[in-house]
Length: 93
Image (tube, rainbow, N blue to C red; front, side, top):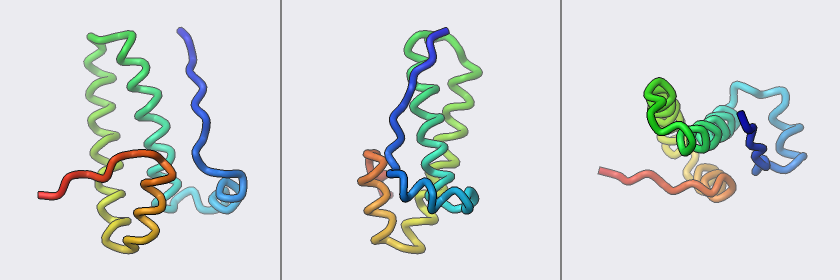
């Protein structure tokens, strides 16, 4: 199995800042984003791995809920964080 290395989006200062706060919303979203990218590359190779597809959908839902929470709490921080992670803003209903 080939392991993909992903370059972290957060700078060193932000990592050190978040080192003590692994429960923060930003850190959790960041770790979910890395898992999503890793699972996506895995699923490109293994198209019929349905258990990984299910895990990916669960992680996507968790990240979506956390991003919704962050957008309600602090819209400016949310916009900045979305830009750093280079992910799209979810569609609103």
